[in-house]
Structure formats: C-alpha cells, structure tokens
Image (tube, rainbow, N blue to C red; front, top):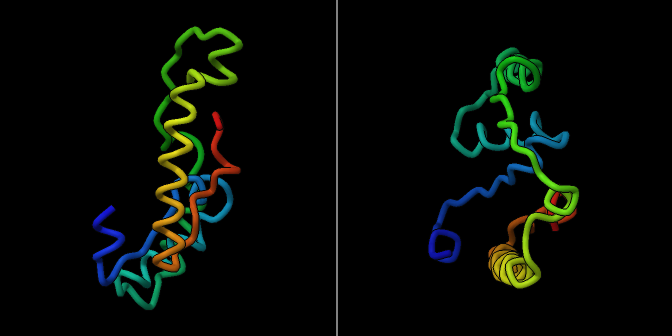
Length: 108
C-alpha cells in the first residue's frame, strides 16, 4: 500500500459506493480531484441515467450450489480476506481516508 502511504495526492473511491447509490456524488468528487471543474452537470446526469440497463456487462451463467451462492470462500480464505481488509482499513484511517464499505460486501 505504498501508493497510499507515500502518495501526496491520492483520492480513494470505493466500487461498492459507485454501485450502491453514491455514483453521482463520487463521480463529482473524482472529477473535482482530477481538476475537471466545473463539472458538466449534463454529462454527469447522462452517466447516472445510463448506469443500469444495456450498457452493463452480462453476468456469466454458472450453476452454483446454495452454499456457494451464499458464501463461496472457505473459513481459512475468509480469515485471510478479513485480515487483508483490516490492514487496508488501518492504512486508510492512518491517511484520513474513508474505510472500505465492508457492509456492502456480498460474501463477507
């Protein structure tokens, strides 16, 4: 996580926020961070309007069991994932950034 610890001009966006109701807010934040201001409101609205529907990739169909659908990781994998999330969250906090949105993670 050198990019976070040693970067001087870093903005962190979380994919889960983009897909769970914060798309417009986070796109505006990204545009402002990239010094694209003033933000073109018409373009921003267009992106939000077309964030669903035919522009999304089709999900690949794969038959899964109910247990796999609910939780695809073994307990040891889950522990390693949670340890990694904890390390990232500590680094984010140390650099005054928003923590990972773990509550929006589907399989944890």
